[in-house]
Length: 106
Image (cartoon, rainbow, N blue to C red; front, top):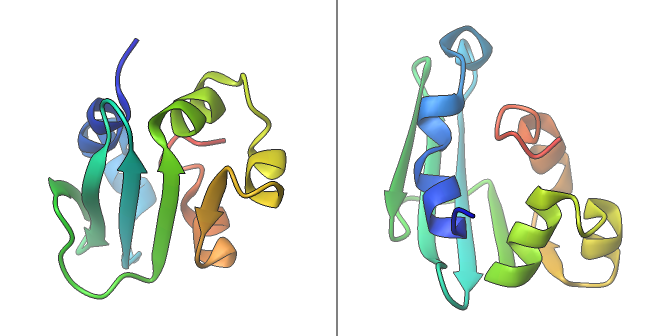
């Protein structure tokens, strides 16, 4: 199974360029535990870039433990319940909903 770090850093390879056209956002991910870390995912000019560390001013910050993040991705944890119970904290849920499909979270 991939780690949260692998998942986030590989997001650009999964995104279809046509889905990124005209979009612009900046996400920070704070994933604690094994396979986690701090990451920035930027979408601008029809491209997505994922890097380690935080850069720029995020439109949305996602905080979770590696177990909860990966559990949600695997379908072991219901995403809505994870947010409602505080297992995953999302600073701007509207922004997350807009990009969840592109990120492969839905």
